[in-house]
Length: 440
Image (tube, rainbow, N blue to C red; front, top):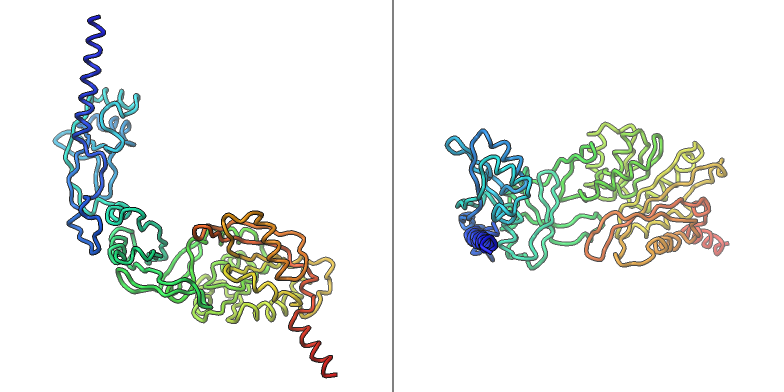
């Protein structure tokens, strides 16, 4: 009876001690609530003092203690959770994970007890703007949803802010400039890609308005003016995936090449590349990057409309390449309208290859947008291809590339281009024949 009563008293004491500890500790380490709604960045307003759990051990036992609580430490930018004291070490713990010793795993508790730690204290820690991550700052200022999500291209951080964040845009820009390593310029896209050159207008939010960048992707160096050409760092994996599909000595036609992310890596593997872009700025930087990466012998560049490129360059060179047994790939990365260019392959060959019965059919890789909830994506892709070509295609292979927006995916459809399509009479040729017939 007495033993049971004593046990109950101990449990009650421990429970009350834990409640007292919880009341003392700051459970959510975050910037002060007063910064919410701020539109001009005031760094001093982010100062605060938090109460956090801690313990102290001798220097000799600090290594063992560290191994026990490494995952429980309070980890913030420019903050040391293990601090020097006179002949000892102070360990500052994350109050979101630890309120008292009971919150630490049994094995770690035993290690700490071996170091002489049987309870935790509460310590006041001053924090300032430098101790907050950009996400923590913006979450405190904006609430939800925050401004998370950006791309870094060289020294430029690129945002696509929603309209409701317009009052906060310069604060957002300054926060990212302050806190993202190696960024010296923060830009915001202010319209969608609607012009024929796939570029968009950008406004400077913070930093220097220097838009010429140098980036390294898949071991290849690219330089360009980000404000005047199209570049998407989120396509790095797809660029690499495409290179893996090509073998040495294959031929690649890049219809919408931009500054060369699909074109230059295969050239480094000794593929023959014919790269085209309508945008004069892209064409300029495409040539620059070809020279920069020392692949001028492998790459021929063109500055023309994609349809014209297919009908003239592909149409005149493909027959000989097919006769030589070359494997030809055609990349069409203009997902908003690339499928509309597929009909340019109808009747495209200027002549039939001499060895047409043994050639490798060209492989087309065409990108397009698709609704996320669209059922039977493969059959829909097949329908798009067959409608554009006016001929049956045996099969297509569809691959998910990335999610572009809610309910919008970027996809790639890959298929062999039938010889019957390339030798068919195109609408343009039919018109010419009809004109001749009428004149006679």
